[in-house]
Length: 329
Image (cartoon, one colour):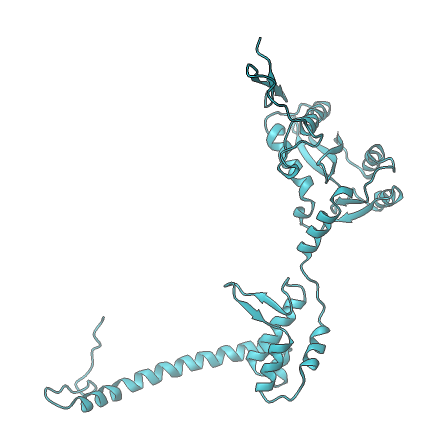
């Protein structure tokens, strides 16, 4: 610990045989100005911070005579109900601790400040605040409750060996992860998309909802066609690919399992590659979401005899394999 230097006049006198009371009194008198000065500086900083907070939230209840702490409580409750995904009654703080931000706590603080109002009055004002809830939870609930009648569509791009950009269009079923349609074009337009939808939906399918994003090719004419076929289009939020997660995951699987290993030569070559991958996706590839089953429900093969051995059959040019039993020769 550094030793503080002092002048002979300011240093506390040392006593060799004096009483302990006089020594303690001298030390207190010496330390008191330092402690009081530090406390004064801290209180000054707190006062400046409170003034800045009041100025920042001068449109809230603090400017109407309410203390700063209460104003911050009500301001946090307003943020929670205005779309910050926090419940108005209670929410978790960053440290995991629950805070009560509803009418009972605010009413209790008002009573302690001398305001004679009822809790019902506070609750009535809080009810005027719009509650949005958790949009992520609502969307996931929608996907889980209507999985068997939901399809999704999307585009993704693939460059060729000549650096031409091709657009891959597909429609996927949510329940069994089946690819209902897949095609490739170099010039995607709204009319081309509508034609692909005509080839996919005949109007007799059990689907009711179709998930799509805000691509410019999905215009009003396409929306009208979907409604005419009995489908309700559900657009995802802007820059929210997780809302169309099944389609996005299929794009990632197609890239990792074939498109990252093979360079497409042209449009016909890429179309053939995708059709082979779709066949592998339906017949051979197991999916965690389907209980390690395939979209076409690949049957389980039991070992026919003790002499049978496991053999592999190449898929997609040997990039992947399917395994089965075969009797020994």
